[in-house]
Length: 240
Image (cartoon, rainbow, N blue to C red; front, side):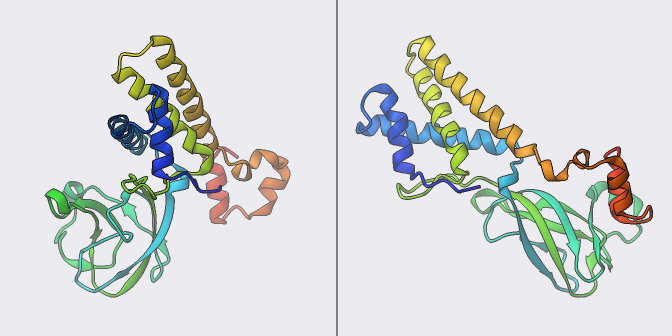
């Protein structure tokens, strides 16, 4: 899906225009705040497939915590795979781990993880905490949902697919109109436009025709993999 080519200044001017003057600096500032608020809502609303990304993390013996990605953009972990042990790590609650596992802070073969905020304040960063602390080097492949970037400079591009950028504009227009106690019909119009676009975005985001085994005849689908193949277990979990 093509990324957005809309600059931040283009976006906030379009939003400010709903109140009549896209060049008014005060309206532009309000439009900027509205766009940033909409992006904050998106980050808390949904784990979008377009923000699913991957990176590698190099493990060092006796080091427990690691950064994921190149910045503070980690939202949620999707999957972690150990390239040395050839298995996926499981999320394990730290309190449960400490209560169940003897010598829970010792080194060993990594089988699980959780997430911690290692520092506080402006430098706060969500980090990967491994269970056990690795006793040897390894490389993890990490798939994770990143946060949508919040634009600041005029030249920043909206960090969403091009097909989704209109939702941000529509929702910000509804927000700024409501702040100005504008006509309720105008607020409702732009809110309906935003809601319809968001509904379509969510549907598109979770709809994967290629993953639907219903497109194959049951006989064919069951014959592709032997019963002891891992994919057969996955298909069974989906009810095939």
